[in-house]
Amino acid sequence: MVKSTPRQIGGGRPREALVRRAKESIAKGSKSFSVASLLFDKTTRERAHLLYAWCRRCDDIADGQEAGFRNKSGELKLDTSSPMDRVEAIRILTNRALDGQPTADIAFDALGQVAAETGLTREMTDDVIDGFVLDAQEWRPRTEADLMRYCYHVAGAVGVMMARVMGIPADATETLDRACDLGLAFQLNNIARDIADDDAAGRCYLPEEWLAEMDIPPGQHMKPQYRKQLVKLTKRLVDSARLHDAAARVGAGRLRFRQRWAILSAANIYGAIGEEVERQAEFAWDHRVHTSTLDKIGHVIAALKETISGSFEPQVMPEFTRGRLMVMARMDGPIPDRPMTPLRDEGIRRKED
Image (tube, rainbow, N blue to C red; front, side, top):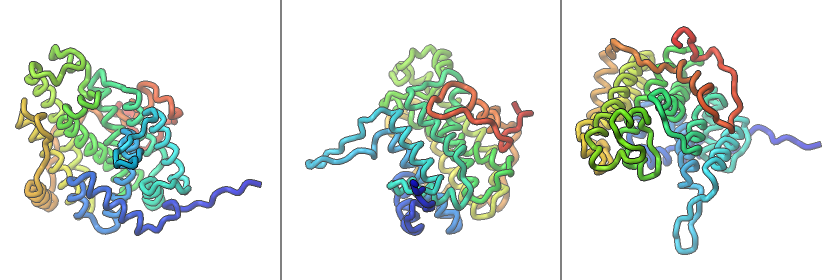
């Protein structure tokens, strides 16, 4: 008789060790979110760091950046396995972590720990991993809807997971919708900032229809002669980010004081990235746009004022709702390594679609 491996939350590692390594991961990988997370209460902050460690590790494995080794001369040898193989490894390790099995990878064990504490589900992690599948398939968005579907996978779904980490119940649909909006806003600003970096990596997240409208040939959008058109497309991204950001702030009003302050601080910091890209116009991609420490402090102070006074209700809500994007994520285009799952009532309000 074969014995099954007993459940070991966090891979059997001490929770404090997982939290310590997760804190190191976020300090290295995201100074913006690291600053905002300091405003959380201790438990929420630790759980947010545990979730971030998994997200960061998945990114690194998918890109083949941290799955390699150094030879005797110290040269880094990156993982040469296929992108789809790397995504499959992410999915296998993630599922083991959610099943309470050790993974031999501290970031995935961190996911197992925070999932056990907050009720994160396989459906949630699958939504995120499907974004890596799209990249592995060298997928490109054809329409704005395609772009928003991708943003849902890589950021909107993470926003929903972060809301659950903050203790938002699974049936608090409106608040989870707004958490998704915040993730979408973050990603749209990131795409605007990283157009040049993505092009260097052979990726483009600007919809083909947008490029065609501007008479920009495929793969040529970073050429100097198209900078003015690119500025116009970037404004579309940033304007869309503002719309989702405004919606997200409504949801932040339903959080506890420290959580609201942290989330609004993050929103201000990431929003400033998009605004700076827009301000620099044709020069925005000559260097990577970032916010200084002093700027971050200013955004945190502004967030405190909004936390106390409250956020304005937006006059227009975004067209691409979480419910609509979840339907698109499951119905629009093949993702062969994930079986089709039935839609659940959670977060899906069919009257919106």
